[in-house]
Image (cartoon, rainbow, N blue to C red; front, side, top):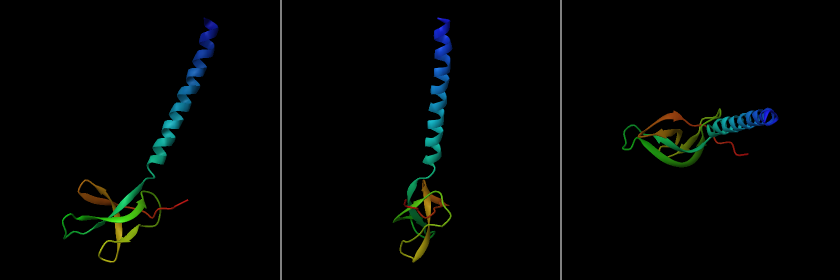
Length: 92
């Protein structure tokens, strides 16, 4: 019985470590999500107008698209507002 405990405990520790590493990796990759961009039009209803362009949540270049007023910055929608600027999607 003691021999079983000495083998079982390290095996459980290794499996728990691998599981938590996998879960953490999935969470980090989830932050890089492709989203539909929305243009902010303050005088219209709704104020956030959907574009057909897909953008990313991470990156360095601001995502822009034409949604009726020329080239506009695109934002991520949150409820009825669009507060967060999206970035250009990098296709690999």
